[in-house]
Length: 378
Image 1 (tube, rainbow, N blue to C red):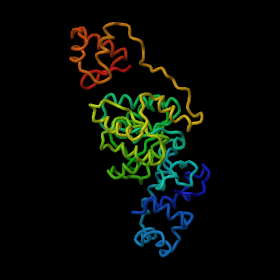
Image 2 (image 1 turned 60 degrees about the vertical axis):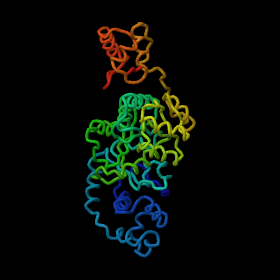
Image 3 (image 1 turned 180 degrees about the vertical axis):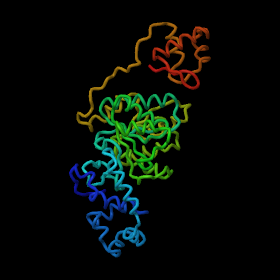
Image 4 (image 1 turned 90 degrees about the vertical axis):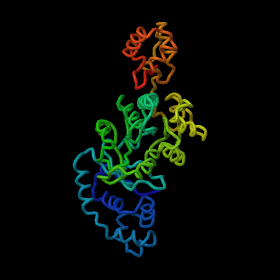
């Protein structure tokens, strides 16, 4: 936990105030826990750099003390200063900045600095973390996007990690209704990863916030992603898991959320779907089973104190079917992806007639074509 005096908002881009924290964050091997101990001992990062090696060694190892006093990080500091001055959208938050999220200060290993592109104020708004499989089923992707859209409409910020699959669907759901969304990255904030998410990255930079504790230029490294999850869960009031295998990294996010005192929500699924097993495990361990966005909003309501806007319970795709043949098709489909042959066999509708009906229903937004067949939307 870091306890320091907060500076006015106007000081957020004040380089002299940022510099000592940034220098600490760039010392190899000097992680957030050791920085917290040093700040607790010396009172402020500036005093750390003027301390004697002997005094530093009373808190950290001689090797780290030597690194603090002699680290060659001049080029990194120069490039970072150029980056922060290059755009009004670029910010670096330290524990002294008024924009630094209070919730992160309570972590045992709070980020020493946060690099941000976009709207810093979103980091202090009520947030829901959404995580899950990188290779979700069409149903899982749809659930993540629809839940995120409806919860963003209610006023919460959707926070995720911009990974493939559920993360991307969550961000897209929030972006689709012009809601707030935060992407916590496991790379430098100036790196687009995965590269195919360039459009999502650019949209979040305008409509939301991209956040990282890692120095500019940091490339994807497997060990960075579990560590960034503590920030994702730390920023959030709760974390929603949509489709996760038993070995999924999403379960790490859920565990961190529980350890941080956050709510954990999980969407149940088919017992035949291996991506449901992680969610079912979480539910057995006490996660809140959710079937509708309202389940999450009701659970979080006591913490929000009026922050939730009026929720629209009527989904755009829900309408009453009256055509008997279309009703037969819907009944034959259930809620999983179903092939045309399966629909034909269960409904008894001739293939040629069925093809016309499926096309009409897709145009009407009742069903959607996916790899392997169709899925109902209402």
